[in-house]
Structure formats: C-alpha cells, structure tokens
Length: 228
Image (cartoon, rainbow, N blue to C red; front, side, top):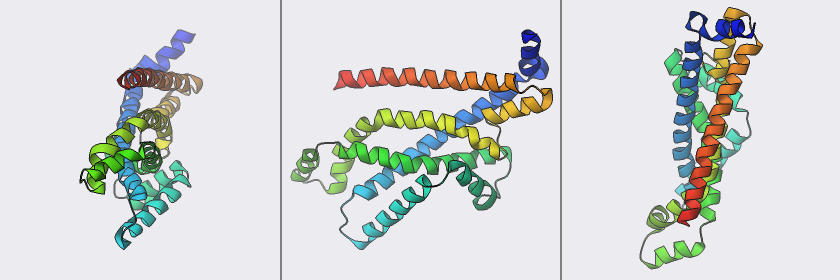
C-alpha cells in the first residue's frame, strides 16, 4: 500500500519532475534573494551608520529607516502579492514570476540584512576606524578597506541563518503563479488526490536542505574560530 502510494505521487507520469522543478525554483529564489538582500542591506547599513554631515546623507538615512520600518512591519506574503499583482503585474509568466519573487524576497531580506550587517559593523572596535583615519583615509575608505570586511566576518553566521530562513520563507511563493516546493506538492495533490504523501515528501526535502546548510554553517564557524 505504501509502495503504491509512493509510486503514484512520485514516480507515475514522472511526477518527480514536478518536485525537481519546485526545488530548482525554491533554490533560485532563495539564492537570488540572498544576494540582492546582502547588497541592498550593505547599502542601507552604511547609510544608517554614516556620519550625518550633510542634508543628502540625512535624506537617504530617512529613506533607509522608512524602508526598514515598512518592510519589517508587513508580512512577506503581502509584499509578494503587491509586487506580483500591482507593482510588477506586467511580469506574469513563470520565469518572470520567479524574478518577481527574487526581487520581493530580496527587498524583504535587505531590511533584515541591514540590521545584521549594522550590528556586525558596530561590533568592530572603534579603534579600527580611528586608526584608518589617522593614516589619512577618508571615512568611506576606512569603512571599505578596514571596518566593513571585519563587520561582514562578524555577521557571517547570522547572514547564513538569514539564508536558511529565506529557503523556508519561499514556501509562500506559491500564492502567485510560481511552482516552488510547496506549490509542487499541491500540484501533485490535485492530480492524485493524495494530500499527506506529497506534503511529507516536500517536508523531507526542506529538512534535508536545512540540515545540510546547518552542517555547512558549523564547518564555516569552526574555520572562522581557527582563523581568530
């Protein structure tokens, strides 16, 4: 009975390809969003800690604060629906849908990444900035060459946690026309009328992904401690 169910929900009519497509889209969205979130978060973090010496920096700092407040204060699924059906409604095919998801989750991740990076930068000894300035570097040069690399190193474990969270958060991508892992399970259910089996397969895939990434994170943290 169990073998028959597995055959029907995974092997019959090559249904495993539905799971593989969902897995590919999930990883594509998570990796793309993580990269976008890191880049955006770096800019926002630097704006928030930069000296407020002129009106331009103050305006950008206000925008950055507003961005972080709005993104962190609203559900990611609501952001996805707004981006897909309102802001980027012209991007309505499958692959463009994946791009919309990358942009949405990247914007969402950027708000959290900015706080992660800001904490990592602020954990760097203030003497590092003073040493750089005493050597004749500008604030930007000191931040780029001395402080920021150390801040990223401090924040790296938390950044990795954010990537793991992104893997799981992409499960809401199926609310729009994107076949992620969770949507793949629903598609198989609609064809086989089996509910528990497809969900169990997807849950196992998520678990394997997360446990594998956690092991990579532990190895990375051990090497960082040896470097220290």
